[in-house]
Image (cartoon, rainbow, N blue to C red):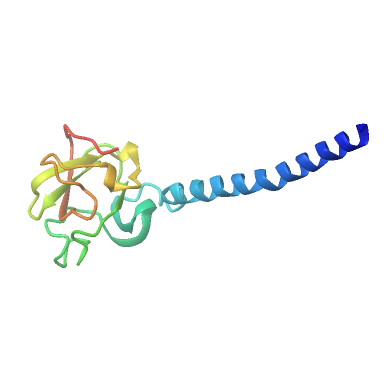
Length: 153
């Protein structure tokens, strides 16, 4: 009887060993996705970036200056309006280090801001403009500002 109990305990540990690595692999796969913005961080280079996918996948464009219309050429973003699902602020710290994103072209229709110290927002579906609209797939313009009263998370 003692050998049967020992064998049963050994079998239980073996099964637990097979199940535990699968759980760890699943957790690390999730962690990898949420860290992609960290992985591609370019350092402070003066640009704001936007990505079509969450977690900074599929770059839509980048801009060192303001862009009043993300669908028009000339401001860093072209044909990028209503597409961004994540954004990254690699701007320099100090003056004009905050990126103010807008719901409409021409810096209108509500806004929300990303400070340089925040680095990025990996999923815009958590955020809304001051006008109440979701930010995910709804940014149409941005500008660099010195201050803001509304912050993205």
